[in-house]
Image 1 (tube, one colour):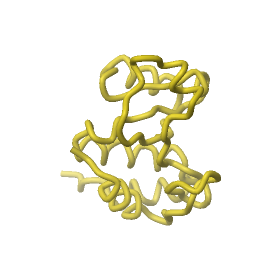
Image 2: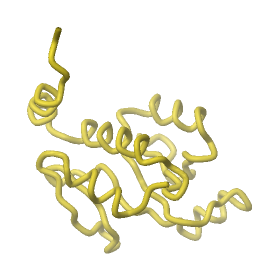
Image 3: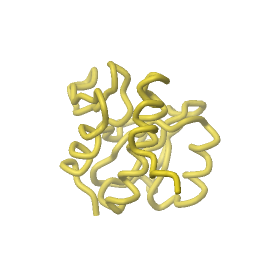
Length: 134
């Protein structure tokens, strides 16, 4: 299962990524000052809304490409991905960090980075990491 060190290592391996505290002082990873993943503990309103289904343990907030991607992740694995009413309408999912495999976390973080990176930077990275054509 994944850890905050895995998040840090993966996020900082992406071009022009930096770790900076979020507005509440918790770790957040950004590309050109745009957050793509961050620590997101549940707040009182989240706990009230989720009730007994509220998870404990570390929670990672992740920006996704759009609300359709969010809905697909939530439907695909509700034991891993979830959201709160506060996030309704936003392309953000919450992830139970202690339940995600590192390979899936890597894919999720890279896709979050693509969702927030400037188009030219994302295109350059995509070209750099694309497998050679045969």
